[in-house]
Image (cartoon, rainbow, N blue to C red; front, side, top):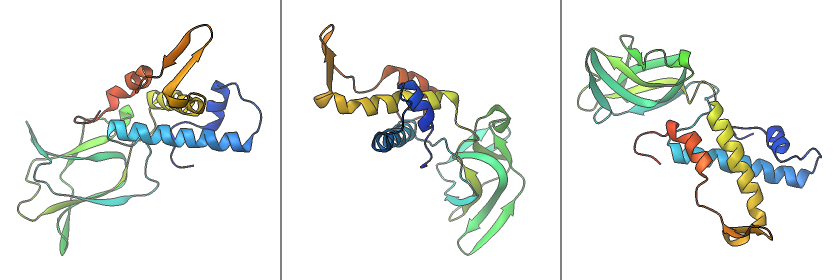
Length: 197
């Protein structure tokens, strides 16, 4: 599995496929992977959680926002506080910080990621960086993302039967497929990072 947001069994049930056909299953899995990665690209984020903490380094300049009670450093989605370490410094020397708060308030309890770290003091000056060790991603895949993945994977799987982006029937005639499925977009739009989409 490559961090797909829906599973093969559910997709097969939606398509009313209950047999085992390894070559078709491979195409369905490929469609699930492509649908999941296209949602990542459209939203500017990923909804799977790292299995273990990893390090990322941030330059505070241009990533901080003034809040009423301090300076917030905007970070990539953090889906767990397990193993979370925040340090400031440079490649030669790092100092651990403990005087920070996660933003938004109660994010993880609400099933959403931490997207900022608030501090009453500065995040550093000049060549200082902020190094964060965390499990990045989302605490769990939102239901809307699962459904959007299933719709898009279904569409991608059936695309093999619509050459040139055209489909149709004797009853309805020829129909050109739209570039973006409106149902998929409606499901993922609330999760799009500002500046994406």
